Length: 246
Image (cartoon, rainbow, N blue to C red; front, side, top):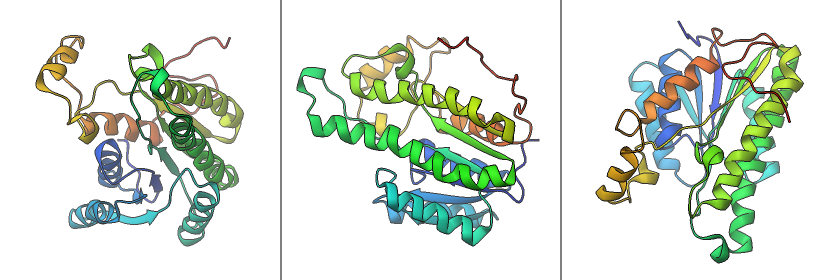
């Protein structure tokens, strides 16, 4: 179940955290994984090597999703090399926290260029080959912050909320081509991004979670693996969660 044998999956921001977990889980399910990175080449190669040591297939691809041309060229090259691209996990993202009044214009631009425009660019470049193949899976990495908001994360929350709108629109646009588009919105996940928080802060957050604990990156990756598989709903009317558009 949820096997991805023979499929090629690109995971942006795949060198650490949730991205790394997605690479590992997708490879375990049989996919050939492309581990994208921007600056962490050594970390990306470590992920690819770890996958290979377990008998999986992986390679690295360095490009910045905020650079439109570099992204388009990289995806075109990997499609030419492998002859296909079945799964895109648009995970690459950055967080710049702080009160809105202290947010600099260049920080706002950087957030949207990476988290939103970068994700859309990846989807657009990937969609071409998926449409020709009449099959494909796109998974955006949103956040629960995009739905509920959070103090000091106005801009970050806006980027993650934007991805939900992108997901719903693209899902409607390409369902007829058997290309599904979904978003995963993790809550508080124990990763490098949250490692700087004090134990007191983590305890406070844990109290707000029904299970009383933080989530793990592999738990998120498991959801991504399902959405990337053939078992995920493909009908135009099927959805794990439907809302009437407004």
